Image 1 (cartoon, rainbow, N blue to C red):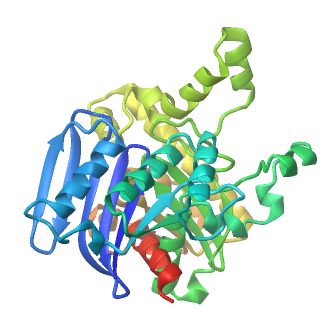
Image 2 (image 1 turned 60 degrees about the vertical axis):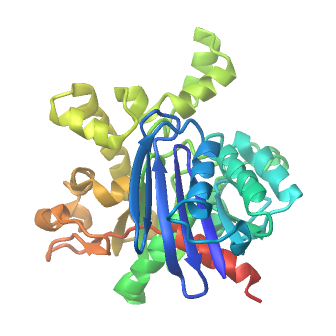
Length: 396
C-alpha cells in the first residue's frame, strides 16, 4: 500500500511517500521559505536527488510542484495518481472534535476550517493541502492526523485556565497542545533507546519556526507550553509566545489597534522576526556572530524562555531523566543547545561540548559522563508517525 504524507507547516511543506506496512520510504522532500522568492525545494529518492530555488508564493503552488514531480517528471515513482492509496495529512488543531486519527469528510473539513481562528498560521495550510490532494489523488483515502491528540492525557488541573467555569465548558476554552505527533514520536524513540526505567521523566523540546516543550511522564504528556492556540509558550519565528494579556488591551484601547491588527502582530510580526527583522534562526545566528546586538539579545531571550520551562517542568515531573532536542533548530543548532544547557548543572544537566558539535542523522547523546540527565538529539519524523497512523486506520 502506498501512503503519501503531507505535512503543511506555516512556512514549509514536507512530504514522504511510503510503502506500507514495511515503512519503506520511496521518496521524500521539503519546501522551505514558502511565500518568498527564494523558496527552496528539495527532493530525494534512492536514485535521485535534486534541489531547486524558486519563487513559491503559497502552499498550493508548492503542492502542485510536489504532485508534478511524483507524476510527470523523470523522477516519477508512480504511473498515475490512482497508485496512491492513502494521503495522510498533518492537521494542527482538532479542538474538542478530534482526539484520534480520522478519515477526511466534508464535515471534517468544515470543522478544520472552523478551528482556523485558533491556529491561523496552520489549519488553513493544512486544509489547503487536503483539498489540493483531493483534486489530484481522487481515489485515495484522505486522512487527518491531529497535533492535539497526544496531549489529551494532560490532567484537568493543567489544561484548565482560571477563567469562569461556564466559559471553559460552553466555549471549550482549554489548553490543547500542539506538535503532538512530533513529541509522541521522539519520546517513544527515547524510551526505546534508554529503556523504560531510565526514561520515566522526559522533557521534549521541539524547536523550529514553531516551538514547543512537553513534560512527559511514563510516556504520557502531562503539560505543554502551547495552549488554546499555538501562540503562547516559547519565542517562535513570528509568534510572540508568552505575553501579558494586558498588552493586548493596551494596544487596542490606548494605541487604537483593532483586534485583528493585534492578532496579526502577535501571530505574524512578533517573535524573532519582531525582535530582529529575521524569522529564520540561521540568519539570526549569522548576524549575531557579526556583532548584531538585536540578534544577540533575541538569542538570549529565546534561550532564557526555554530554560524557564525546563525548570518548571522538572518541578512538576519531580525529577528528570532526559531532555530531547528535536526539529530543525533543535537538531541542527549546536549554539542553541549549548546556550540552553549552560548553567543547568544544578538540575544534573551537563553538556559535552565536543559531542554537541558532532552532526548525525541518528539519535545523538550529548551529555557528559558526569551528567545525571541524558541529553539527546532525536530527529523527528512526523511523516512516519502520520503514515503509521493513517495505515492503521485502514489496514483491517
